[in-house]
Amino acid sequence: MFGRRMPFRERMAQFLYGRNGPDTIYNVCIWSAFALAILGIFTDSLLMSLAYTLLFGYAIFRFMSRNVTKRRAENRAFCDFFASFKNGFKLGKRKLTDREHVYKKCPHCRAQLRLPRKKGEHDVCCPRCKVTFSVKI
Image (cartoon, rainbow, N blue to C red):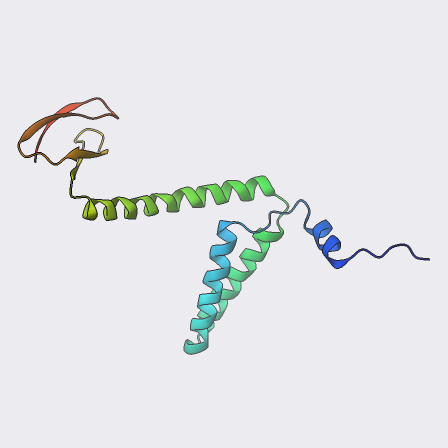
């Protein structure tokens, strides 16, 4: 009589079509809000409650936003910013565990160079800026 009733899954898919959906910033906001909510249970702080409510609200805003290009640009900038920290930690770990190489910075462009561990003074050419300099290992 009234036509076919759409299943809930199809209605949700139709509602969410064209929206941003979950991304890295959304996940960080949700998990941070969850952690602050847990801490808020123990501290009973109004500021903590406000912080996790705002984080949760911002996560929902990002999830439901129809301005997908702007949200993707924000997410890309966020991921690029934190990738530099991640790469720095990886380099630090590699420096500690690598026994066959020495890591030195180029005095001109400050690029990190991985040099073989051979004692003495060596002339090194930086692959980035092509400056030749002397290194004592």
